[in-house]
Length: 366
Image 1 (spheres, rainbow, N blue to C red):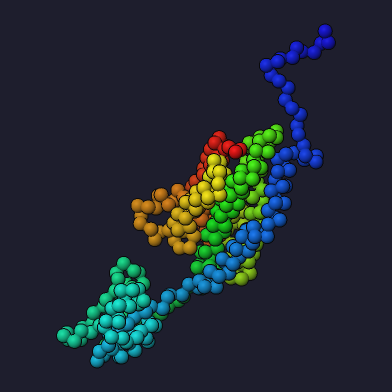
Image 2 (cartoon, rainbow, N blue to C red):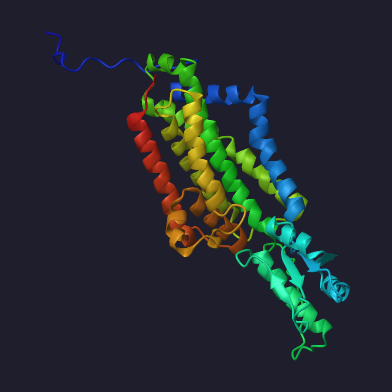
């Protein structure tokens, strides 16, 4: 008798902790993901270069978002030249063309409004336009005002314009938080989901399966490896937007950093979920595009989601990108705190937690 407790054969001894070069497998896997990423110049461009080009191109085009110059054609007639001159003085892009040509341009969307004075009337004006187009309705109202002024109408109330051109209220200020969230979405879904499926195709996952590496360690390492690129990516975007267009924070930068980290984690979890069973690049590409397209169009990145009908708003608010965009805009443009974004944070966090949990359960190594 040695005094040692008897061995329980039902509980085999656990293998000793495995290290690689003195580092834990999780740390080594994160490190390998970082090195692999840095060795791909095209990946560096899509992570760092493409978002900057998006901000630069859209910022230059829409930094002030002036009203589009409305196109109006006047049907040729005795008073057409005078009407076109009055419309031009009101800031409309007006021209005189024959009736058939004017109607054809209106039908094909090459003008917003057609102004006509039929010969069989007492000089009254007929406005032809598509009432479902906001710019067409605006062209109609501005044309009617210009023609009435030309006919001698006088305003009873004097007014003057005071255009808004302050940081925080411009279109570029509205755009930058949306582009930041969109960059997180693309990086999480494509940077994680696509990478996992590529490793499955290259039979690398089968090799990981043969190691003591736990499933959760592998999935978490892939997520962390992608998230480490978020910090310099977002800093670069904010610094460039501030330097190029004067975009500024009205809220706490730490609150924005928390939201960015939460969004990156959530989107990485969704990317893992899509890639958990996909075996081909075509399958994962189809799934990722199916998820991304509604969020590109409906989450309010490039324009307010309030443009969509009210019955759709509850559904749009549940998209994972929508609450992140709303929360980022609230912090950056309105100075909100994290407590003021509690609902949005809850929705984004729920997407991340549920996605990672389901991915962990259904994930296949091959």
